[in-house]
Length: 183
Image (cartoon, rainbow, N blue to C red; front, side):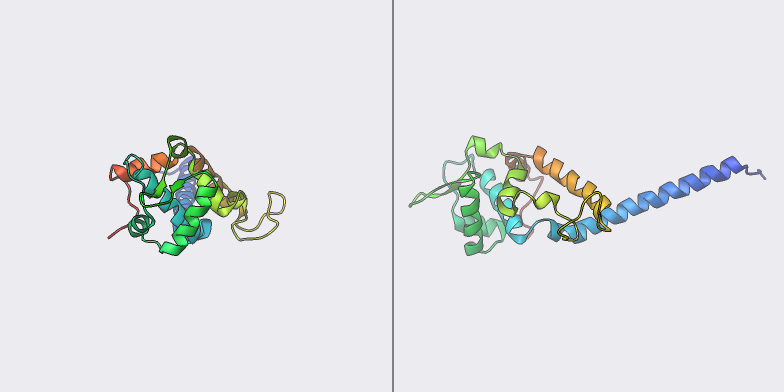
């Protein structure tokens, strides 16, 4: 039988601490997926993202995409979606054409827009800098209990949305790597 030195015990203790930290990270990520999914983006923003990505995925076709087709493919209410698309059109993230052959479409420049532009057009510029608990005054000097962990997650989401274009998301939809509805 082997004798264990203090060094062996310290190493074992370090490994156990590391495993607990990894467990905490997994739990935090799981809670993020459950809790913050609906807290991060409003239903308006979720529908807006889904509609924009669907329209972008149809942008290589000669025809414009109608509101009925959009709503059917993203499982969203027509009137609500129409209001969201108006916001995106006013912010020059989508284009629309009225009339018999009308509908929504995206130009090459609009397809290059980062996803953060779309989110900020709907939610406002400060959405990705707000407190995770909804406090009015939460900062590095006066943090809420969630501040330090939530700030890093929020910053990662901001980086992701800044680096991903509307076209990137549309391509993943077109190639079958992503879906906007699950039947």
